[in-house]
Image 1 (spheres, rainbow, N blue to C red):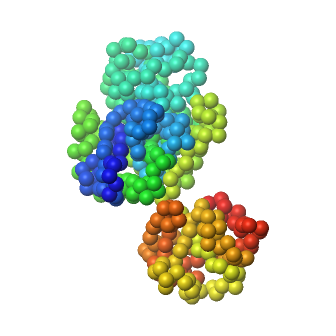
Image 2 (cartoon, rainbow, N blue to C red; image 1 turned 45 degrees about the vertical axis):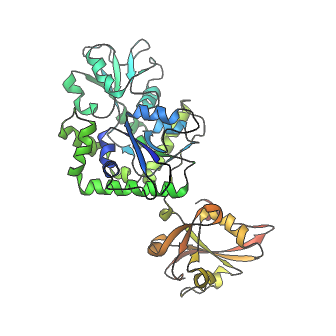
Length: 402
């Protein structure tokens, strides 16, 4: 176990305390790491992530996708833990009796933090209106009730309770996003520092999946964690919050989620709210990556269609050496310097997953090792012959794009 604790920051929102209940109670652990957890408002988490310093406040944290785009060079999005979907966006609210209801250059408008996705949407949709003032999300609605501001962007539980406070809806910013883009709205996600070792990233991602699975299997047990950090809300409001923000994209962003992140980055760049060309990378778990095996001095077309491949390392070391796509150039350079021709075989991850381990090898990086014979028929889904061109081998374009 690492000597230094892994610093984890999560928000007090019910969808987060639902997701992280297993980690908060110790029922789920991050393998090899001791956790140090802080629960804060999402804008406080944003600010702590953004703050400069030799020792970052958090290794892994919940944050707004707006903030993550601003820190795309430093952060990776984890595929599990996002609040992303349809019908869950921020609301632009007005104090009772306000005329006209839409924001103008002279309106006093409150937003729940400069780096929240809510603030990003306000700037995207109302570029000519007044600049927003930023307060803690829980202060927005009370300020409107007291008449201290004209409009406010409301997030979290407020979308369920604003009418009871006498406030009126000006626009559902999430619905406008959906109508404009036909994409789900990325509000917040779980982000990890790019400087973390891959083994740590893998352990955190695995723990998030297990914590969410536990919460879904025993949802009633999570109420203790949710109530502790949202005591002013009824259980019905807590469950409404979970039902709205915990969905298929919370377990895994998937292709649609990743595409939505690209749309958000593009729209923000067009509005000059983030740098042109900004793209947020999503961490890909090891078991979901493409797997390859290299056979020296072999023509892929001449290998038999089935049967066991003779791999010397299986007898000598107990496993078959494999590489991820991004590792192939390094493997070819390190171990196939004298070869003229190499057969490249792609393996089916589902076929080999039970016998696959990820272990430190060249430079301490994790490599996939197959602890059984390689079956040319059952395991192999792609074959190429690589010919040496000068000092290197040319990888197929469909492998390069991995």
